[in-house]
Length: 336
Image (cartoon, rainbow, N blue to C red; front, side):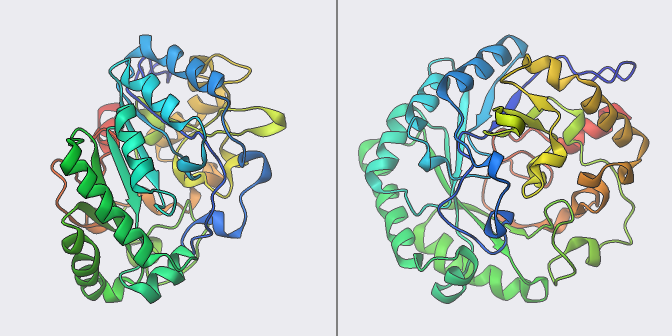
């Protein structure tokens, strides 16, 4: 990043949401209380391709086709993945897994999907129903088992199928971790990661897993997200627009407060280097986090390396992007 004018001149990764709605109301997700209507849209495939085409000359290497909605609800998902595959760009989806049938998984593999990450919150049948808002524990486990079988039998090793889990009560960390290992990771024989929950930009209060409560004695520092070459784009937007550029995924539930501009009416880099985004970068460089509502109470400003409780994914460490392993914290350090 050029500190003098607070602009970036490359894009290595885009977290590009293709569908803003979701078929579940998971308790730990702001979607559960109702996302703002303007952000429940699907991204037109033409707008999607336009964004990708604008970013390729800037060094685009990785795309995560999700933001906060369920990507498997996007009818053009395979087309979107194939568009990346044909351009040697890696792809990732993050899904709740309830619509991930073995047949759909094979279709995604054939399109060239790089990573299929499945959210499995709940270490047994009862806790899964509580946190995921649906009684699909057995269904998802068995579906994933069949997907892994197809992957092995048909040679789809180029697509990584992994699971993601959250510790919901930090005081029960070891117990929940062991249950996840037993009932999901070892049961499936799958790559996975287990994290502490977070507070979605300060929207969630003082529960046992709120890191602002447990770790507020630690000094705050930039999360690095506004400062680096990873861009976050929503499917929907304000005033009938699409492709709202926001600073990070944690604005879910208050997306409208984080809108920096829209790709549907403004060239991508004009939004990325617009005055609102540069103002946010300046605040992060100066440690003035309280000047932005979306940052003021965010627990991502605290250094909590123990947030990554457990993983068997090579290269996955605290601070890295799930789609590329680029380290957000490096961007903050290089900008100081």
